[in-house]
Image (cartoon, rainbow, N blue to C red; front, side, top):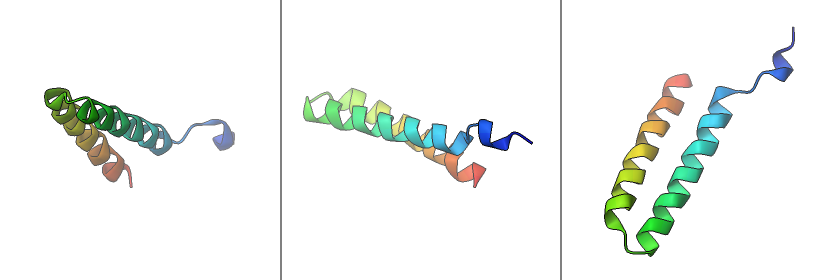
Length: 54
């Protein structure tokens, strides 16, 4: 009945995915390759969750 009040979990994950990619990009620009690889791996896990929901 009140579906419009519920947040779509894909939207939340997509926002989290984009934020993680942005953090990874900034880490790479600052020369912190270890953090970049960790954040990229985290982003890939989030992307897998998004694909599972589709």
